[in-house]
Image 1: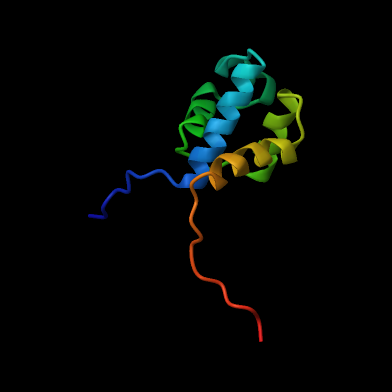
Image 2: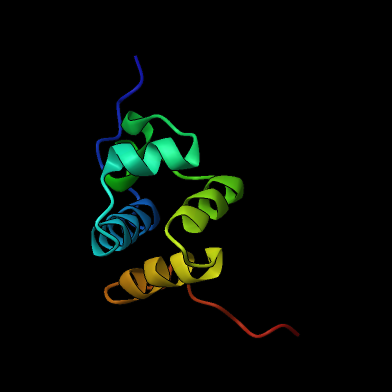
Length: 95
């Protein structure tokens, strides 16, 4: 039986926090965001908790409802991610 990974990937967590932050700034409920974007409220909740990774289409649809660009939504997540992130591996210049 496979071991279930209970850790949340930092990228998913950062996106979820950015999504929730922006949604609450706009004073939109999860239900309203779900209705306007065409997703189920449970899916919005799972995204905000970092349980799922959104597709590019999902990012763009959510961003449109939140009245920001997809790039702005991703940039919020990147800023959260860069606060405590270490490089995954050492990089070497190409030869």
